[in-house]
Length: 267
Ligand SMILES: [Zn+2]
Image (cartoon, rainbow, N blue to C red):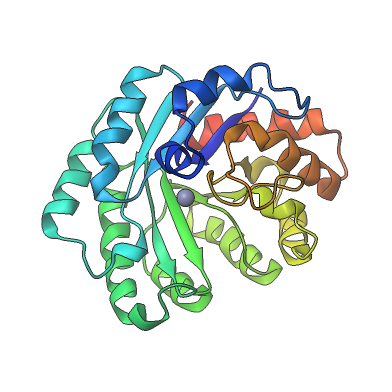
């Protein structure tokens, strides 16, 4: 049994043209034996325009949970009202986390200073919410660490989502444990990509008790579906690749990640 700890169901619908309800019923009997229906989904709404839809999905399906945050790509358009709405949605009973938020210098190289300011503020809001935090950190290692080192993270569950950084950055994130944070690192279909040895090397450093399975669907579909719309049913491909990295039976990896999901998100 596994939970997809990070997916964007509404974007999946847009990318694939398949309605979420159809996907859910199809996953139970997909002809590919490696495609399996997850036990539950954490649907991440990171555009304020999508908060309401996330709430609806989490109310309609008992196994869909939601996270609310504001992605760094909205750094120039985000308003005070967006933040106020986010705080309201964070109180919803099916909300399990605040995020994703963070820094993205890959796509946002020209808004670095603004992103750091926003990251600091969202970190403050997220910590005040007492929810687990979902961080999106891309090509901004030093700045991310500087912001995180300045914050009081004690007792906070943090999911470093869709890890794409270096092994060095991975161990720096794990070291935040010394600040009292409970760090979990999420791996997506990228671990199956031929050219992603650095991500597999990073995964090798993450203790079994701190790993999470996620797809980031509809992005990052694992091999052999690379380039196609990704959905949560592909988690077994990710689990198999991670088990190979950790040199353990895949059942053991599933068991550990399921338990980590419980510890991080209380589900
Ligand atoms: Zn995401």
